[in-house]
Amino acid sequence: MKFEHTPVLFDETINLLNIRKNKIYVDGTLGGAGHSSEILRRLEGTGLLIGIDQDKIALEASEKRLSKINQNYKLFHNNYGNFEEVLNSLDIDKVDGILLDLGVSSYQFDQGDRGFSYKYDGPLDMRMDDSMEISAKDIVNDYSKEDLIRIFRQYGEEKWSQRIAEFIVEKRNEKKIETTFELVDIIKAAIPMKFRAKGPHPAKRVFQALRIETNNEIGVLRKSLGKMIERLNVGGRICVISFHSLEDRIVKETFKYYYLDCICPPEMPYCNCDKKREIEIITRKPIVASKEELEENNRAHSAKLRCAEKIGDSHEG
Image: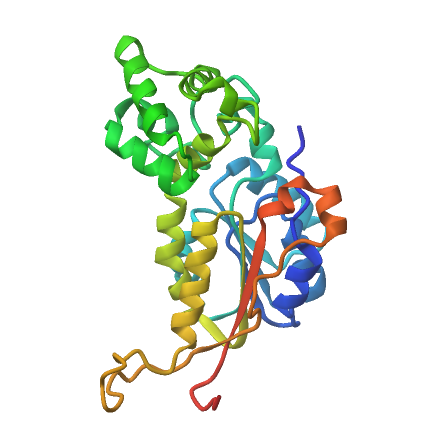
């Protein structure tokens, strides 16, 4: 199966990145190089594209795809949370554009042996990087009931979190939970029949929560986003596509912090925090998919795109 993935909000993202020749761009979630292929085309052999991904299969697919366009790119098997390590290895201080397309690709979902999907039977894995020590199986079998409830509520917004966690603990006391379908059966048993017939698949929210926890997706985003803004050149832009309300909130709040001129408490008679505004927020409201895109790509329903541009110290707003 080919690593092919149609990027959500493709035109909007590429246009907002404002790609310019002789500049340096980072795609922190390279995937199958859907966005990066167009970035590389627009660079026209100048500047540099840096692609980062945890998935070795994605990197192999991207290498083949990008090599047919041009050679001014470098790919790294890493987590975008370590982007500074990547830039430092190239002796690059600042870049002119950064893209994050968060979440999981259609290819990864459709690979049953990766364990991302409740639709395919396979090992309960969910690691984007298979060299990571902890998998979804470890979380399901080793986390306390209270921790399972927490991640199901926080990352899955699952209203049956407590009951599902109780059923998991009961089952794992009999034997280890090894596969996706074993977990699906437990979730279905935990949710009363009359509530299972409505809405999305009953396992959807729990699987989402486990994937986010397995890959520390929220923690990595929270740790990295501000540092990415700080490593932008003046005029450089950062674009983030999120698929989860918690991710979008982190992007929104981080952009808001870097936009502020002052963070002193309101009761302070004068400012003494030395905080300076560092960005312009290009998207006052997140960009969402058009009706046409939604008809073609169901994955686009929850997508939100936000963009900000780095400004200089002398900027007056």
